[in-house]
Amino acid sequence: MNSHAPQAIVVLAAGAGTRMKSAVPKVLHPICGRSLLMHAVTAAAGLDPERLVVVVRHERDQVVEHLAEHAAFVRVADQDEIPGTGRAVQCGLEQVDAETGTVVVTYGDVPLLDAATLERLVAEHEGTHSAVTVLTARIPDPTGYGRILRDEAGEQVLGIVEHKDADEAQRAIDEVNSGIYAFDLAVLRSALSRIGTDNAQGEMYLTDVLAIAREDGGSVRALVTDDPVLVEGANDRVQLAQLGAEMRRRINERHMRAGVTIIDPDTTWIDADVTIGQDAVIEPGVQLQGATDIAGEAVIGPDSTLRDTVVGRGAHVVRTQALLAEIGEEATVGPYTYLRPGTVLGARGKIGGFCETKNAQIGDGAKVPHLSYVGDAEIGEGTNIGAATIFANYDGVNKHRTKVGRHVRVGSDSVLVAPVEIGDGAATGAGTVVRKDVPPGALAVNASGQRNVEGWTQRRREGTAAAEAAREALERAASGDATDASEMDTTHGEQETR
Ligand code: UD1
Ligand code: CA
Image (cartoon, rainbow, N blue to C red):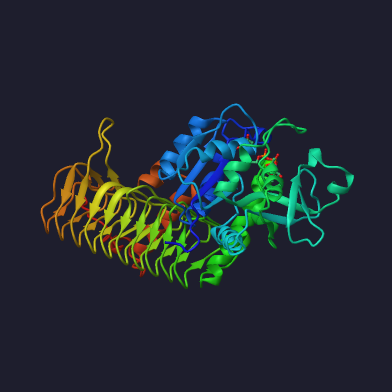
């Protein structure tokens, strides 16, 4: 149990967010792989509160569904038609049974706020036995924010005045309310029952609680953050992109400080939940998304996008698009490679250039080096799949599986028509269409026989450079030149001359 675990955290997410101009509720817009709301919920959950409540109203069904999917432990509170942050918190507290303890209030649209900052706020609040502690920031342009009114000594906060209700002198104050607070629960409940809507916006202001708590004789203090971006909200898509860029920069910095080499942080996009081991190298132009997990000493990129993909120690992944794939230790993937869900590549295995794989378990040391499609397949260890082999898994109605055993050599340009099985140690000739199972150790061949029509080019392409080249070669051969056409290498694949 966290020593400063608060009784409850209430995350406000009922507002309309009209400036986003979106059918998607503002708090569900993502940055760095998580919704704004899930950033807020993750920070809150980091304090291990007894109860975590999210207050909803605008597009509540979408927000509630999102929470059920990503944070089922959260309690949802519905705000009624009475507007304002004060009413929102009052509705949130209906989900809190306790009478005493600390309650933290945060916003669902403030994505950079982290658990460490909230912990400091709670520690400061409880350490000073305050009724309220508000997190504040000093910013160059305080327009629009609530202003912090301090007493002469500057120790106590007398209240907060909203921009729209403030006079000239108050508007000159550059210390603003972040909207994030720690409250004594009993004080909060009591003060909320006494606030009205007599203000410029006709709303129940949560900020009015501070003056009431002060008048009741409680200590009301402010904790000034030296990092104002932590408390910045995203109100439109410009701010969303700016906060996204800032979060990205911080995520990259966190990984670099933990021992990951990022060659070009400006072109490296790493989602919040990605994990990367020490001495991994991230080349330029890489996006690591979702729950991707990169082991130490792996090299990713340049130019790769990996989502929910696991990469083993020392693997190399270059110019690859991967989704829900697993790449084994010291395996190599790419360039120009597409790994689709269910691809599992064993240790020291290879999926090379211009290959696509899906739902394919490829054994340790097995190789799919060039230009192949491998779908719905199992490939045993040490097997080599020749260039341009296609696993024909789809008959137009159903998908079928192909099983290729251990240490098999599939010849170039083979088509494996599923369902089919190739036994351990078997082989196929180049250009084989495998429709029947191949027993262990057998060589399967069925490429149609080759017939050479002698002199075809000279007769049918008379006067071309090709005809001239053929004539010269045959003349040289006839005069006993070293490069004898009839001795050319024909060992690639199975051939016969008819
Ligand atoms: C609020 C503060 C202001 C502070 C600013 C920081 C009040 C009265 N004012 O102003 O002092 O400087 O935040 O950004 O609290 N919300 C609800 N239900 C509502 C209204 C709002 O859940 O009825 C939620 C919103 O979804 C949002 C947050 O509360 O997450 C803040 O709402 P917003 O309307 O942006 O507050 P401001 O007027 O900007
Ligand atoms: Ca706001």
